Image (cartoon, rainbow, N blue to C red; front, side, top):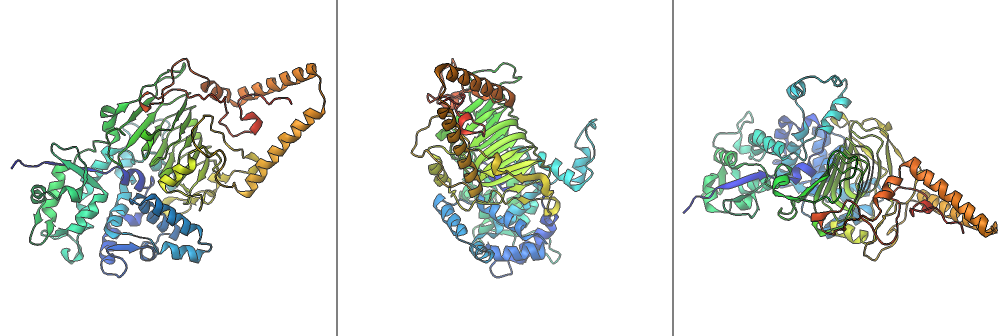
Length: 590
């Protein structure tokens, strides 16, 4: 029989979605996780599944974490679990009916996680930890602009801006470097010496190997089918190579570790490789004045679930809109986009905005997380399972989320507002990813600082109702819904109704003025003049221009994504503004 060879690689989502893009608490070091691994195997209610009640006891009583931080890690891990949309909606309904802290805690206590996988998840948080040596030799030569971080907050900001969540090479290096400790967490306490060290003849159970499927997957030679690691090892030839004993039904730790060291390779669907093997999306128009063409790659035509990626880089001074099945359940990264208006109106898996500026991004429902890092003057409109913002300046976030938005260090002048737009298929998309209208915690951010302590509470403010305007999607789309599927918060609804009343009063005043035709033309010309001056002063003329019909044929295929997207219904301004200005034309004199 020909010898099978296996290729095993780190799964993308535990790193992209599961690892918080910040320095983890020091108590997540191997020293404490080793103690926790022994503790959970000897206590009721901890193994093989760990409930919230016992994790809170361990996190708050043993690891000295704040309760909200303990819950943050617990619910983040739960986001990674393969639950159906119906299960997610049932969970949201149960939380929305918890009207007191006691009821909320009772509901949380119904949630449990796989203990061994949760241990691996906690260890994985060290991905973004920067060692003292790394921080000292990180730059070959010191930059005139650089200076040593003078506080833990500045160090945290630097780390969050350099996170490795999308770096598949860093994922592989992390697994290769820390493989021994990862496997040690899975060894039963009886396999350890009195000093806590792994014995040479230690064994791994089948349950331990199955828990590794959180992190590892792969394929065998001459096959394109991807399997989690425990199913990959169902082949007897590979079991033999990995040190499986048919008598004890366990794996030799030493031989299994050697097998993985030989089999580990770079993820073939990661960002490092799919820009070469994936499809490059044609960009139909180069905008004058931009230094680089926008680069958009995807691997959605070949990647298995959990590895579907779309990378959009250097989209500058363009309007980009797409609703396509090819985006469904994809992990999206927007990198260095500037002065752009981007609409991705499909149900998405996760979205990361990295180093974007002066742009507006409107997203379809995101089943797991939206992460905004190192952005400036960016407006994001989203429905998301979780929201994280770090190292960003003067950004406005309009969100609907069932979890508390996580504010990492380094943020300055953030504005948080309620979700304020809709499109015809929004409700269907929300149901498909398991997101409900309630609970909605957009205005209850969790501030994350060094060691989980509270960072600067002055880094954000809640948008005043006086500055709130609904957002208009400027494209025709098929679907049934033509209005908000839920009520706005009372203060914001009152502000919107007040403006609508002002418009009615304006129209009534003009009508009662009984202007003749000459006066009407003069007044209309004056209104149009002031409106166009406002467009130029606010910079919104650029967006209107980008929505004008292109001389090029607009394609609906993701493989030929247009640089501008138009509709036959006229132009609607994206920016938050009064309704009479949201139609892309001056108010009409009645």
